[in-house]
Image (cartoon, rainbow, N blue to C red; front, top):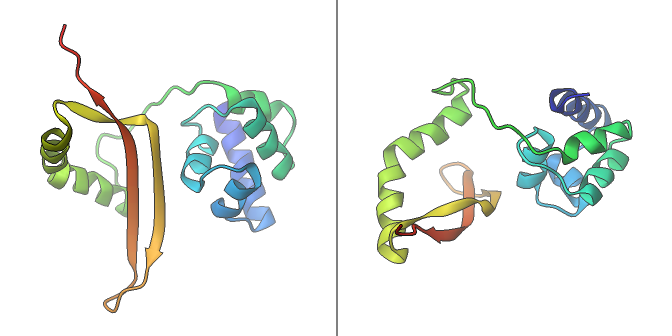
Length: 146
């Protein structure tokens, strides 16, 4: 059984049960962002979370061990074509240098961790149409001089 197999089982079980990522995340006591990313094979799950997900979605027991495996993160496409994902790519292209400059101005020469990291996506009502609010928080990591 591969990570791709387990991801397909998770998506099928989610659809058949009529669940949301928010609901699945609550059932394993994790954030929806992390839960989805791990379910898609991009993060390794701790044993207790893998077991909780297997139980919550009635997956085969062997799926837990696969969910615990460290991922190999490979993006096969250089420019995303999905419109929603492309917009994030566009945001980084347009505002990436600005974010870098502001982070380094406030913290010094370094980066925001994508490992010690959390993110939330919320819906915000707005008179011109509801807004998507994405909040990211990552540990600051300074570059070390050799």
